[in-house]
Length: 87
Image (tube, rainbow, N blue to C red; front, side):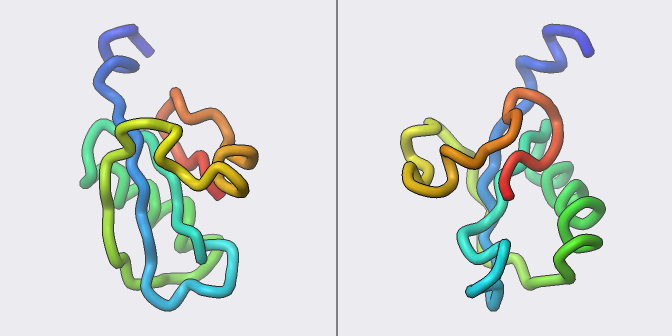
């Protein structure tokens, strides 16, 4: 992957209706080039594992400090490459 491609990736936080309690109760973190790509990754990698949930919101993550510091941040996987980084 080129540096240009890496620079174009964005972090997104996605929340789901009816996912509490459960692994998606806090939401899901995704790195992708667009919100459409983030949703495609959710479809492929998350719904296949946890089942389908209605998406409540998708929003860009501006700062890691804005995420839940007690559970999300300590359990994040690599967020600087394309894919799911939480849960």
